[in-house]
Image 1 (cartoon, rainbow, N blue to C red):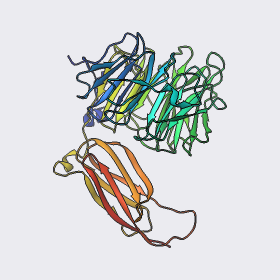
Image 2: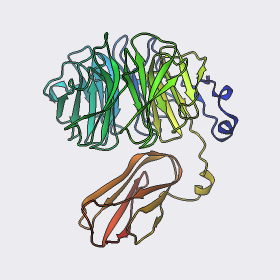
Image 3: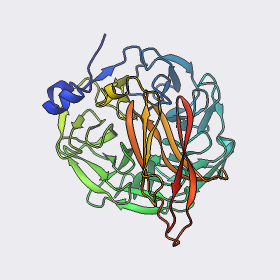
Image 4: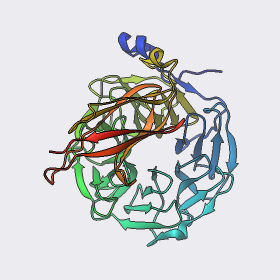
Length: 435
């Protein structure tokens, strides 16, 4: 039986309703837990996993977009986080256990304790996992301290850990734009004392970190979840030690370099926070769920039967999943230019201007929702730039290559632009004019 979780029909502006009318639907066959599922992760529209910690570790899997779920394994420990690189290879982070990290190579059917691969060893569990690709994965912990990050660059064969206690007292979530550039979210100070939310960032794959924002005006609180609907616009949910009436988000419009504090009237103490577009997003966690359709300028608290959403996950801007007492699905949402691609296959539409000194507009079409990677190579086969790597919706898209060089004049050269989609890899030549 279908259950619309958030009743968005009652609270969205008429213009947005006419275009999208998003509905969160309870997936009735999804796992139930009186506390919540801690995390949910999908590698594509069909294949996903949910992990439960309360009441004993459980890993559930779906292969049909959440319509049906199977308990595939029950590893020991409080299962806190998960991330998958493919339908077979994935990881689960654990709390309150000697097993801090599990790895699976068969879609979750068996979970191997790979904690010993983390060197130096870490003093707690893994609260957040971010899979960059099948080789590079990051994890962070712990929500109650201390703070550290773990990283693999060889698909999980080995992991290195870095102590981040100089920056943070607690660490909950992590987000990476690519292998080198990423953010970590937690709190500065003692969990039960004078703690404030803090975001740190790295531009060298975690070798060094800098403080990007400390929310000193938000006391006895710490950051909980990161969400980036675009590479530039992102949000961070804030959890309070107590339960205030009003809540806060942190928002960035420049890829996490700087952040502003956004009030959420009536939002209370948040845990889950997620945005499917720069304007449309939700917060939840401790009994109150709020929605905004204007990027946080205004909010609506919504009566619902599950206010304990701990994680929102989105595939592009049309499909999403949320983990609470059960799993919920949003979408798929209509695509504005869907009719224009009905007869088109995935591939390049145009690269222009070409030749050009830059910037160069690369336009391509996707026949369906899927994972996309746009990259540039020189004629020797060396990767020059990764312009985009993320889930995108069916339709027409454009990414810009702006190959400005701070090293002075360059020679005219020809490069290969490569588009990788679910249909395979296609390439086009582009000539970059020197000067």
